[in-house]
Each structure stands twice: as structure tokens, then as C-alpha cells.
Amino acid sequence: MSALYDTIGVGYRRLRRTDPRIAASIHAHLGEAHSVVNVGAGTGSYEPSDLEVTAVEPSAAMIRQRPHDAAVAVQAHAEDLPFGDGAFDASMAILTVHHWGDALRGLREMRRVTRDRIVVLTFDPLMSNFWLLDYLPSLANLDSQHMPAMDDFEAALGPVERIAVPIPHDCIDGVLCAYWRRPAAYLDPDVRRSISSFWKIGDIAEPLRRLESDLRSGAWVRRYSRILHRESLDFGYHLVVTR
Image (tube, rainbow, N blue to C red; front, top):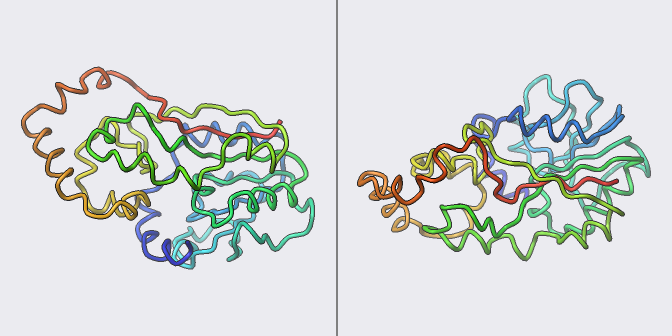
């Protein structure tokens, strides 16, 4: 996975920025922590600036894109964190668990090095109400086999709760569902290049042609007009937070 992100990670700092509304939800659940380890940290999105953060990231390309004033990054994998037991007050992992080679082992490592709160931002791969699946239904199956179920999270971390994270219509973090009210964005190869799902589904030229045609004809607006007045929608993104 680090090799993959050495390729797709180029441009992450520009297109995968911290959305303040999502950040507020993440940071509110870190509790009274002073020290935090960010596992699968990427370019540093969502790292709280007022806490002592240590970042863990396997991809050199991602580490190189971290801002000069970002937390120190250790190049390592979630499954083998190079820290002692209980080294941090809290730990966080943001849209990364489904990329780990052994998600349960990585989660257990987070539990091992964390004294208190663990916060994981993840998502339901089915995304059942996301219109893009009408054009690209294969998106719903990509991460199903790699995404831990809630029972798996509890087995690795102890008791947890699930907290919905709605995606705002003008989300500045270019996650897969970020452009739900800006459909033309999915025609932009730079946007797709920063979303790992598009690297996994092969040739999508024909579905994109259909989307482009529907946007030009007005068919997309007629079909999905019900969402155009919404400020945010729940696509299955959620926090898993230890109690």
C-alpha cells in the first residue's frame, strides 16, 4: 500500500485538505488527550494543532507533502507501530483502515500504544444513497472485504460507538463522496487521481461519458434534483470511538 500511495499520493496536499466541519467532529472526540498518534497520517489532514502529535505513514510520497510545520512523521506501518505500550494518550486513524494489509492487527496495535481514547474515521463501502453508484456500481464492492465490521472494531479496541459524519456539499477534502452536489468534478482526472477507489476499478471511460452526457442534457439534474437543496448528506462516513 505504501507503494500505491507513492503514486496516487501525488497531489493529496492540494485536493485532500482538512475540512473544518469534519475536523471539529474528530477533535471533539479525542477527549482530554495531550499526546496523539495519527496512524496512516498521510499529508497531515485532521491532525490537531494544539496537541502533541506523532504521525505514522508508510508512504514516502505522502510524507514529503506534509507541511513544514506539521508533526514529525515516522515511516512505518499500522501493523507494527514502533512505540511502547501506552505511549500516547489518544490515537486517530483517518480514512486509512481499509488500506491496511491486516486491519485487525493494526487496530490492536493502536489499542496497545494508546492509554485512553481511539478515534477512527471510516465508512460503509456500500454507500447505498450515493448517486455515483448508478454510473459506477462496482465502487460499492471495492473495499468491502478490507473494511472491519463493528464487531471487529470491538474485538480489537474494546467497546466502541459509531457516530455519523455527514459530508457537506462544499467539502474541501476530496473524499469519494465529497463532490455529491458538484458532479462535474468527477470528470476531472486530477480529482479522480486523488481518490484511491478510482485506481482500483479499471477502465471507466464509458460511465464517465454517460455522466458527461447527462450533465449536458440536464438529465442528471432532473434525476437527482431532490439533493440539490441539501447542505449535507450521510453517505455512511462515521467515526468509531472507544467509550
